[in-house]
Length: 396
Ligand code: NIG
Image (cartoon, rainbow, N blue to C red; front, side, top):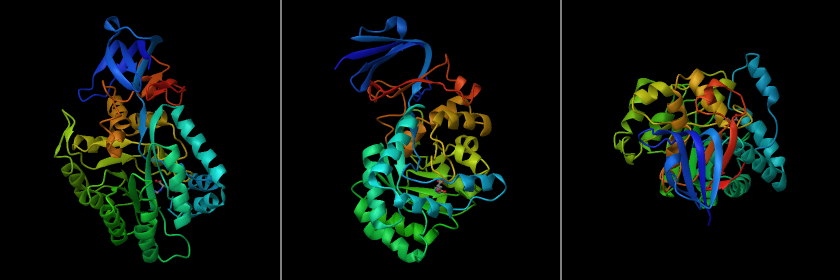
């Protein structure tokens, strides 16, 4: 395989453990991996030399929370919300109805187009979830389709109790036959632990079943109010708890406690539970922003993700999520970039392979049409993605 040198990089944000940022830098790609990083003046020879024209480079975004497998439109619900109606989980049923009606080919094409749109704004690794099927055959269909189209896949059969079903019977179906049927396709099992969705006892049943099957877990928790989601995610050693808008001191303490066996300086040890913040969702539901800056101060690792879905966050643009986190959540630019790259990788358990620009890691790079990463927040909403390399290949 040919080597490619990316040179004339005005600013290279590596997101390594030391937070190294280089000026006048170059990166050598060998096959799928990064082979060398340093000053452009010291760069080794390569088969291909690409002049990036004084642009900024950072790792590709790692979007660790999305719901791309859906059909239908809920813009009316959005408009009603903007007129004062509160968000409630019931809208999930509307999307489930539309998704069940979509043919295999239609659904596959829609998901592929959404994945391509995310790539076009710098997302090189993307997680998505099932959860708009809510029956055994539909959840299996969505899991198979998702497996082909995204990088990490999560089973969210426990997204909502379908109309006409008994909540406990449905939980047993999810924790039993449904989970068994998708287990070989998925990386994570997730559950929406919230008033209006699944309660603590039901959440435990699903997490216990996942554990028994040897599957890693995630929890949607504390989105609409305080609740047991965070505590359960910590108790079960989940990779992440997502949303985290309403946290009390016990929740923060529990999350911080989960990180005591992790050494941030060397990025080694056992990771704790990542608190995944979803700023575009918070905007679109007019919820208070998740307290990402406070969590970081307390030693909790956070991720930023798009939560792309038709109900609460219809965007997959991580440039926008990062800008919002800086402008609205009081994260520094460096904190937001790390949360949207290495933080996402931690939330997906792939931090040894992706999430930062280091020799040996997969060559996932985001080239901005700007001389520094600060432009992401300085020029919010502007088209700033110039090029994207995924596993060493230029995709855009
Ligand atoms: O993450 N919170 C639960 N699930 C989605 C919303 C799904 C919907 O309303 O369609 C979320 O926000």
